[in-house]
Length: 253
Image (cartoon, rainbow, N blue to C red):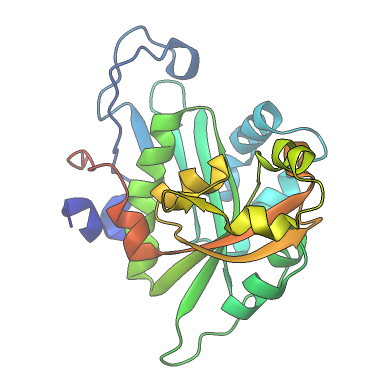
């Protein structure tokens, strides 16, 4: 593991983990390649709500986006389980990530994303594996997403969490189902080609360390190309860290 795996909260709020070779005028407000100091990654605070709402409005429909009050509630309920990437030039929120504690049983058996997102957080049990559920990831900058995960995954591992569950859309399902109308959706979800999932989104997540498909759910969340189906997937946090691009050297101020 590299130095980013040893991040502690005493230094995390001052760490920037961003590098890129492309201009970023639209998101950062300048016409030069960004440097490691151009993005700040830290835990979110309630006073970030206005910037978070701007990001939600850009990325999601009115029905899909979180409310200002809801975002503040997420932060206050789990202040160690969220993160954001910010442009140090403009202060703009580039990426937000929210997760919450969940039991493996609830992640597998819940009928919908909403049921997981609203589930009561479990009480820690001695020697029990601690799991997280991915509530939302919003971003207008792919490199900022990488920076957030380079910060956040070692952070939650240090807190004692073992794995992460996500509800993944299935964007290839609509076309596949039209060609295979009589075949159960589960056959598509668990299908593999050359050892990798058939669905492109599941292949993407597999490459990011989410290597277990634990359930196929109908009416999990609205998603047209997925026909409102989703796959519940799981990744060990150690595997998610191993799948990250090598982090830039931390910059401390």
